[in-house]
Length: 461
Image 1 (cartoon, helix red, strand yellow):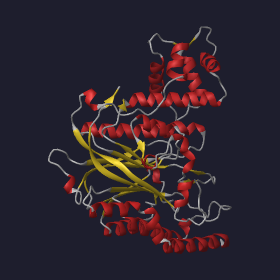
Image 2 (cartoon, helix red, strand yellow):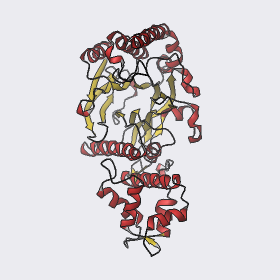
Image 3 (tube, helix red, strand yellow):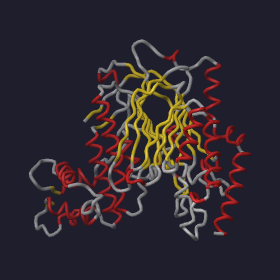
Image 4 (cartoon, helix red, strand yellow):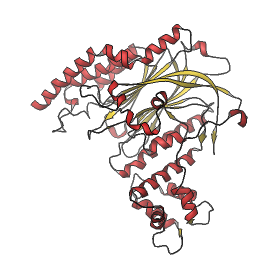
């Protein structure tokens, strides 16, 4: 108990220190605000800002790492001071969109605190708890003077980890009315989520599955409501880095990482920034604001999904130190012919932990993958098909925009250019984690978007 109290005193000092740093936060982390003000003063296109932040639920915050049962949630003064500081920084920054993860929905006092302060600051709020009463969840808030909320949907994965997602369909409102035209409505789809932490390799497929389900849900919502192409913004804690399969899968669907785009970072620049120090003490970049513009090339979702799973399949084979020939022999199993049959394919999936457990691929998904691999449909996969579909598959690589004139697309819509993106605290932008940062174990990411006219594209096979 004494250790917890001592730790709590230090955390309370940190919260006071954060309060004193308010000016520093505004100077370093609020390019979004100064940019918006400057543009409006110059009568240019105003900016929309978006912030994503995993605020570390008090039920998970450990005050004593030697005693995992000692949590911040047991000490009201500590979690209250920290969350007031979080709210101070959010309200001071005044982003157009705020997406929070690990929001402590199970505590009525904290929920009321956020709803009251964000409501008084001009936001409309939507909260969603994780299933099975896990205690935390999501909160998405949008400024009422920037958006009209057209629809709100909740998505429950009902899978391992009890994860959820929120979908907001909004229309840009004043002070952006000068950008409106009679023929184009400026609408956006906003998604907030928090993917599963991959505690072991068998859960990697779960995270990929979760993103696939989100995109399926968004696609279904667009079709059900007969929506025209519009920007899609995906926010959250993705619990995976730029090297991961989720990152590549989203890229194949035309999404871009706003922070990397703003700073012109390539995939090789993965170590240049971090956004999280996890419970193992490792620092990594896992918090993203993804943007899909209406002019982006998009593969069919099922095609991207199959390629992403095959890419994971190949990664696991190579991690087992198998060469191309070894991998083909592994999939052939005891088959005497120079080909792979369905039973051998499924046995390989099972040995690689992709099936055979409640979180793995379903029988239907395994069969769909097999049908993709069996290109000629003769019931077996020969060496050429193995090379083309599995070993040398292009995977989920990003495709560039296609000439709209060449494809005969004339429709105009509204998209976004990425003006800038800022992480706070600023040290994380250089790949380090400051010891005196106490707001959360995640950094806050804010992105500045500017609405622009553009031709719209469609999904392609």
